[in-house]
Length: 343
Ligand code: 5GP
Image 1: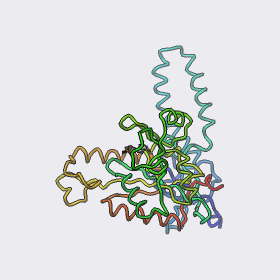
Image 2: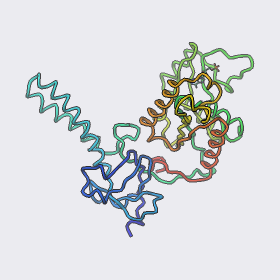
Image 3: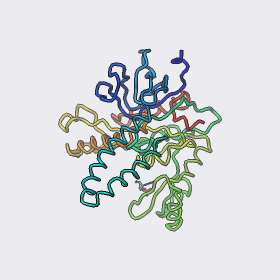
Image 4: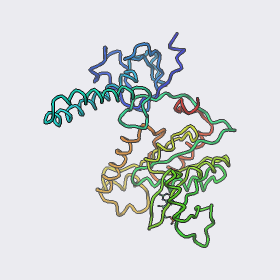
């Protein structure tokens, strides 16, 4: 009965394989899960082992999963072992009396981080409490964030989807220090600002990201996103994944789509597979393909836990159609979001 009542849902931020877990009291009773799975936590009575079910699983039986606290401690324990090793090597050359006090002070610091680890910190990936959320018609549309690995061309994808439906979707107008071209209008293509103004804004943390291109500064401001949302349009941004931390707020409720080009095995077989990015593939070498694969792996490892949806891009047209479908569902259906975004 408790099982039916439990309203606690957690998004797993790590993979768990009970059969490989030496700490579990019973491997057979463990519930295997993958990062991104939603778990319904049936009981948290035991501080070390929770009982949980996987949402969407036809299997009704709950299994054991490590509690958040326990998983955090395991992570800390691993870091502890490494730090302790380094510490011992260094300190053994120094006064032996220092050894104890150093360890104690480090333990103190760790003790205080036990509660509510930051889901953005890849060193402490445990669980994130989530709930279903559906955008209501009177609410500001969720922010759509595209991140992409090498070759994904997310900017092109974004522009295409917006051009198809400019009444519903829009970009956040970036700021730039480059001179305005005759056909451009301030506030349409860009907000044209002086270098002084740009630097001041950057210093005041007004940009979600900024960078330099041909000696001019470019950046997208938080305000630019807000002004799109104020018009009741869905704002689509394409950013470096580092910007995710900045955007993951209750205000924006970002839906994060990770676009990866489908990378063929090798250049020779590329004619059979659709080539990534489209266009200039005649010049793509095997090393380029390897770099693309590597880029996707790296982003997945570092930011995969912040991603709501992975979009494998075969070619521009199909990726665009898929993105369109996702955006339409986003307005109609409910999705899992961190509980703290709606409380
Ligand atoms: P253009 O000056 O031709 O309009 O843009 C040149 C380049 O500026 C673009 O290809 C893009 O790489 C960069 N750019 C445009 N907007 C932004 C932005 O908001 N942030 C960053 N980092 N670069 C931008």
